[in-house]
Length: 334
Ligand code: SF4
Image 1 (cartoon, protein in one colour):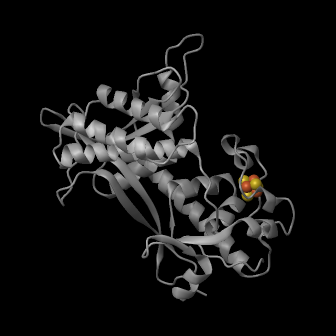
Image 2 (cartoon, rainbow, N blue to C red; image 1 turned 135 degrees about the horizontal axis):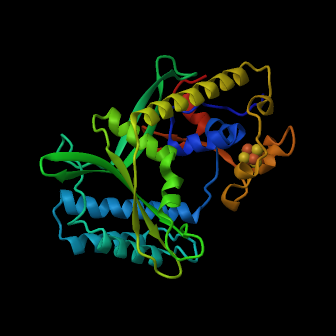
Image 3 (spheres, rainbow, N blue to C red; image 1 turned 180 degrees about the vertical axis):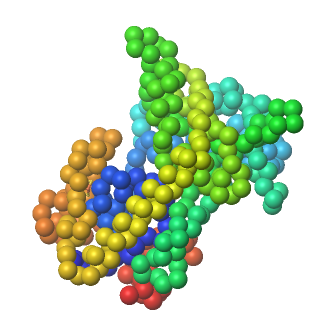
């Protein structure tokens, strides 16, 4: 067991579960040792800008009652002033342009309106936390939660029938085409998302919040050298899938907690418990080398990592990243 302090996550999210699926060691470094260094991913930055800009436009339109064009401008200005994406294709300018075109195709005034919530707001960027029923290994009486953020829940009203749907925008630099043509292969595009844990988690959370969804819309916003209009995919999700997703998610968290307790027993070193996967899709995910690679070359590899990373954790009360050791002391965690 290394002498670096550790702390098991208080909450899991879709992205932290994705790390867990990829490699147990990656999750150990990232979420238990909290070895942190800011690394920029242009796709994530551009995706984050679009999500925030859509939120701003929708809140301005539906909650504040602003004019549609003004809302689109507001969203585009946000992207232009936001952090540089650092990408030569998904530039801030190209992203803002694609979003403007997107809102001209999927107009706010013709869009499915967001579900109204009891507090007078609308279901736009709604944060949720689901109790997993699994007790945290270091804080007695506190359960681990699964947390996330629903981008947009909307309603379709036909006559007297109201159906509810989820909606998420996804930027992309390429799309599937029907072989030998320029036509988008919608079936293949939909297959990318049919069992996507993010979509299933949104649908599960919506059902848990008392708003079961009839279907989920994905709107793909291509940001390419040559302009390509945004397009929509509709995914059907049923209770069977949602129940299994939740069962699988809880099982993964429980298994990981067991591993952690084994590690904390002091009988094994980290590599024996959180076995590195050494697989291309994990170590070289999306063509990017895992930032903890040096730690996996030798038994004492963690020594290389401590020179480059500091141990920092997000403090929910202070709403800032703080030193892990200080956090543990302040919260009386052994
Ligand atoms: S380099 Fe590969 S094996 Fe090592 S932590 Fe990263 S993903 Fe896991």
